[in-house]
Image (tube, rainbow, N blue to C red; front, side, top):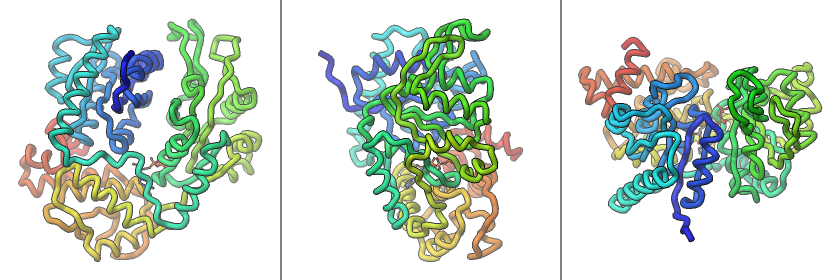
Length: 450
Ligand SMILES: Nc1ncnc2c1ncn2[C@@H]1O[C@H](COP(=O)(O)OP(=O)(O)OP(=O)(O)O)[C@@H](O)[C@H]1O
């Protein structure tokens, strides 16, 4: 009998069959095997969950065979966690690419189609070396996995409601501005639910094109359209027994709303090009940053679909409406990033605390998180000062409340300029300051025309 090791593995691949097969194999050996189809979720997952090994596809649909996208994502992962053990997966691999991948920071490389023993041995090796590293660095704490900070009364009430509804199978609709924690709350509810050992499948409906919508959600039969070379299960089937999280539900067109409604009413899906109905048992959590009741009153969102999805409605307040959470969150991120980047900085200056509490945080917790991360990377002393934390228009408007939009790219560009200035234009040193590889810094400089 195989013993299951306490280890967290993440598989990122846009091919559902690959995900399923690799997960099935690895689940027999590791206690937690998460999978994600959408590479855009990588930064979120790597920041929030301390994976032992990440198995990453090199060829996402954008660019089928050069492996370029895989290299980009590898870079992003290592930017976030330089110690991540990343094993690359490719169908078009060759020795040259393997060498490049290892040079770029991957620990190993597996060719598709794989042999189970080989895949397992590679993952095991990556896992063992990572365990050894952690044992040597016993002082390095585990990442703040699933750490939901909630000091304000508003958030405590929300968590209480979440705990109460988690055990039921009631559909939940989470409303709130971008970056308020909708995704994190959905995962939290799943973790508290009886389905926690089953899949949590997250789908960003806003990112799905009209042509992909149906086959992605409901699957397709072989030959249903030109590229349908095999039968393929959709996201609802993948989530069977577990939870499906439909993000940006307010962004789908009326015809797709009708299709989704039919699936929810019948609790079954029919793959595109097939006439066989497949029963599904999923817990549904939806989220949107739009005013969906208003949309329903304007006939832009079907009222009957809204009734289906909002059995329990949770409104996440904007960060500026729960100011008690700002400093605990900032301290949480400060602790997380000072350890990650090994910086001495440990305190927020009183004047910074005051400014942070008065700032509007239009990008909510995500904006706060990025602002603290960048400040930690660039920090020199033990205390963060107001000048260290980028808050849009902060310098110009002092302590006034701000209602402007927020631009992450602008912030990134600013940070790069600051680092280059500090290091007198020395790219290697600036990259180190920013916690980036030289290649990653060059790419960003090119992007911003610096
Ligand atoms: N209460 C919290 N405690 C700690 N971290 C949080 C909390 N809420 C959100 N975060 C962090 O803030 C970031 C943004 O959260 P999340 O992605 O869940 O927001 P969202 O509302 O789903 O955003 P979007 O609408 O843009 O998809 C994530 O890194 C998340 O871990």
